[in-house]
Image (cartoon, rainbow, N blue to C red; front, side, top):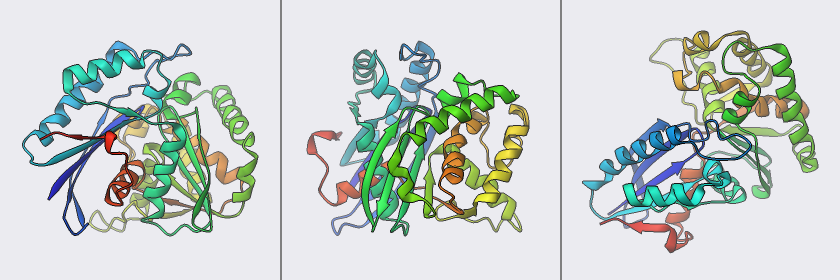
Length: 318
């Protein structure tokens, strides 16, 4: 048996997933942890990772390291996405992580990130034709699925943290700021002409803000605290998504933290994080959204199981 540890270092959160891999190819999730590190915080137009977010990230990585140190036969896949990908001080950050924590990160391209999202979603949810959207802290990945195949994969430099900070969407929302943010998202999306091929199909949404929307909805549907639907595979009509977005925009940060399903650490970025999904539902006349708990990390897991992952990206820890 092999313990496969996957670290996904994003712009808003850092996640650890450990799975037991058996000789017959079966696998079982044994550990999942998430830390809100907000690595892309205040990067600004100069795209510099700032000291405080770096410290939070290293602290989280050291915590994760203790999880696998007691395990045997550990393989580690560590990937970093938009914040590190865009950072002008990327090399210094990666060297410090390697020195202090012993982890060598593979900084993947936006297109690679989008493709891994496709693998993670398509292997666990039925999507023959439609669009996959993964909204992170500093980027958004879009995948057009046609007859089950990924026909378009793209990463765009807009995300929950960047939009929320740039347009002041963290607390009480000014209508002019919201309008500017909506216009920006619309401009970015309408430049992708191929998106029209997904019109009237289905969108599958993942990423922290989109999943938070699903969690809000499932609690709204719940008959009791013991009968709550899972996020993975949950479906929501567009009009329900718009109604929940209305309530989020009307609330301030403290009021959002009191909404069941929203983590306190996400209350100041969820409005910005949901703007891309809301724009796609409007622009492409989509009547329904499905949510996925699986994405990049599951894509890496499936590639590992399929023996397709580049061996240089896997670190044998013991």
